[in-house]
Length: 151
Image 1 (spheres, rainbow, N blue to C red):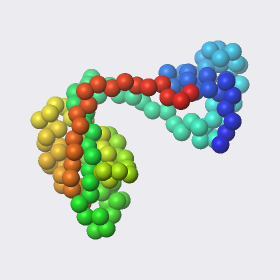
Image 2 (cartoon, rainbow, N blue to C red):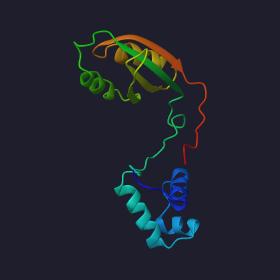
Image 3 (cartoon, rainbow, N blue to C red):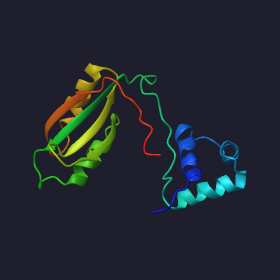
Image 4 (spheres, rainbow, N blue to C red):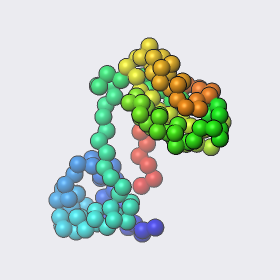
């Protein structure tokens, strides 16, 4: 585990807000030179604190107005490998995340669809036919608040 000082935390907060910031701009915001900001970024990346930068797409602007969280309990544990289920779920374009969880369900999936009838089509034709899929519970996302995180 790497020790983070206040400048490291400020740098991570700035990148969380805008991951496209150049090291020169990061340096200006934090009172550092561009090379000093670059060295800190390099150190955070090499230590694994920065594991990449993501592009966040606006699903609604792309025509995906419905997000549904699915809890899936595998029907045939032992007969279907978890890898097989995960591979098949990952091949469905509407599935945004696949989480193997402990509790009532074996998996939690985040699925996007154009509307509820499109979601029903995805559910019937793709999700319910996944290898080993058993009980499925759906929760439609009403609103989402993005939390700042631990920094």
